[in-house]
Length: 157
Length: 365
Figure 1 (tube, each protein chain N blue to C red):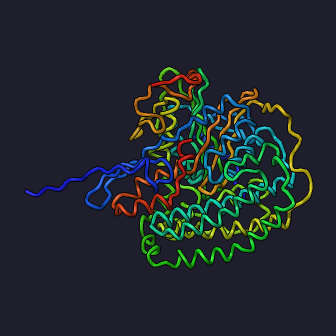
Figure 2: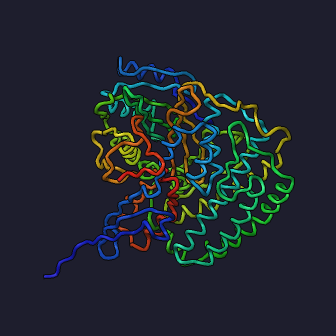
Figure 3: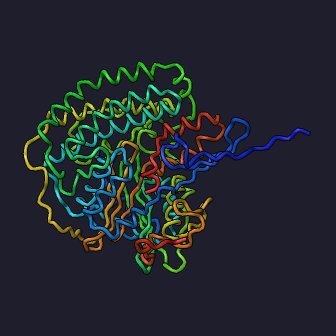
C-alpha cells in the first residue's frame, strides 16, 4: 500500500476545528498546511492523537531562513493510516521562537537542537536546548542567510 | 564512613568502537551506566551550507560523504528528490540499475555492520570474513564507476554510464556464492554462544519506545514495527519486486543483528529479480546541462541501510538550491543511545553502539 497525502476532507475538518489558524498552501506533492504559530501545539496534539489523523511519526523537522521570517517545516507520517502531511509554521526573524513539539513527539529532541544550533530558532519547552553540531562557544548560526563562510585560509576562533 | 559516588568516563571521540568520532560521556556507578550523553559534531563539515553555493549536480559528490558506506543510497535519494522537484522521469534501465546498485550497497553496508559488531565484541575472525566478502561488492562498484566508496554514479535523470559487459556475470557469481557466505557467518557468529549471550535480551527497545525515540530502519524493525519505505512509499521501481521485510520481536541487540542478516537475503532476492527483468535502452534521460528547478520545495525519502534518509530541498528557481536539508537516519537513531544505556553494563555500551550502527559521516552532516 502506498502512502497518501492527507485527504481534503480531513484537512477541512481540521480547519473547522481551528478556524482561521490552518490554511492550505502549495499543490500536489508540495501541498502543505500553514499553521498559526500560536496554535501549533494544540493543532499538532490533535494531529497526533485524534483518531482521524493519528500522525504518530515525526519524520522530519527542519527550518528555512527566508530573511523576513523563519519557516519551520514538519513532515508527519501516520503508520496506522498510511498518510503524510507537511506542516509549516512561521516565526519572525528578530527573535525567532517557536513552541517545542518534543512533548508530542519526543523524537523531535535532536532535530530541534539542530535547528537551534544552525539557525538560531529557540524552542520554548525543549528540555535540553544546547548546541549539537557546532562547538558550545560558537557565537553565530551558520545556516542563516546572513552568515558568510570564511574565505579560504581565513580562520575563526 | 563509607560513601559511594558516581564517576564520569569519557568514551571517544578517539575510540575504535564508536565507528568514527563520536564522544559519549558516561556517568557510571561501578560497572553500571547511570547516564550516557552523546556529543557529536567532530565531523561536521557544513554540507547543508555548502549545498547553497553549489549547483544541483555539483552537490551529488557531497552526498557520497554522508553515509559513506552506502553512498549509492545517498546518491539515489538526492537525485530522486531533484527529479521529483523538476518532474524528470528516468529511463527504465536506469531505474533497474539503481535498484541493483542500492541493494548491493545495502549488502555491503550490512556486512560492514556485521564485521564491526564482531570486532567490537572481540571476535576478530568474524570481522575478517565480513570484510573479505564486502570486497567483492566493492569490486563490482569499481567496475561500474571506478570508485570503491564514493561512487557519484547515480545522477539526476539516470545513472552516469551503462554497466560494463563483465558486470552482470560478476554480480551473478557473487549472488551464487552469497548463500554459502551467509552460512559461514551464521556458523561463525550467529551460532556462537558468546555472541548470543552478549546480544540476547540486552539493551531492549520495545515498540512504543522505539517509536518515541524516532528510530527508523533495521533498528525500528527489530522492535517489530513493519516500517520500510520501499513498501509503504515505493520509490523507483520497488513496487515490482517480491521481497519480505524481516522483523524482530524483542527489540534487543540480538534482533537488531538478525534483522540485518535477514535483510541481506532479501536484498539478494531483489537483485536477482532486477537482473532478470533488466530491460535494454538508455540509462540517462534528456536532462538540460544547467538545471533550474521551478521555485518550490519538496521532501523525498528512501530506505537507506541505516533507516529513513530524507532530503528536503527548497528551490528559488535559480541554478542553486535555496536550502537543502538532509534527514539523516543515524543522527536521529542516536537519540536511542541515552535511553538504552541507562542501567546496562559498561561493556554492553559497545554492543549497543554497534547494533544501533550510527555512522558519523551522516550524524555530523
